[in-house]
Length: 177
Ligand code: SF4
Ligand code: SF4
Image (cartoon, rainbow, N blue to C red; front, side, top):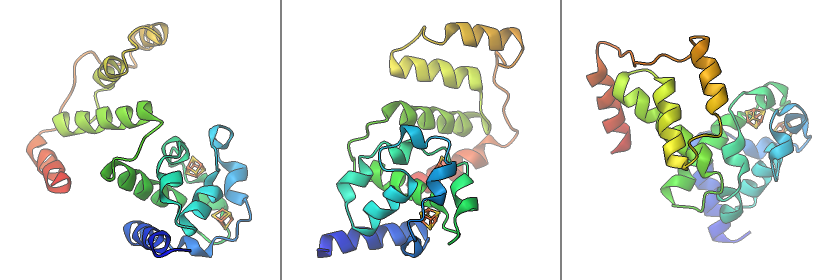
């Protein structure tokens, strides 16, 4: 392993604070993962790439974006490795390093959810979906589902906001700067 590979692995360890070097590659994590069928490397494969310091492969991998953070893997892991924390760290590093992101739709959705929280202190789902659809230039594909949700009053037309939105927006400023 070259120094560059070692450095990347160390940077990920420092970012996530998780000792994934304990991984036995037993595949217990992959067997319960709800999105494993869509993944290229599977959760333990992502760990393997980081262990070997394959920065580009892991940072450009769709797997780090497909993870929904459900923790099924961590519960099954005999070494108690917190895989969602590792995935979060890899997503952060990918964005910071302007890595080529193949799952731009998922990244855009994350952005819209965070923007909504920054604006209102909570999520406004209808606005999130509309803004996301505009960003994706895909306005009509889920129209029937959206209308059904509105008919069942699952989507509020207007946002509600918390009393102290300033504190929330200060938090965003603190962590984005
Ligand atoms: S369950 Fe834990 S030890 Fe087994 S492969 Fe997955 S991360 Fe590694
Ligand atoms: S947290 Fe991510 S990797 Fe783990 S089981 Fe859930 S989706 Fe799969």
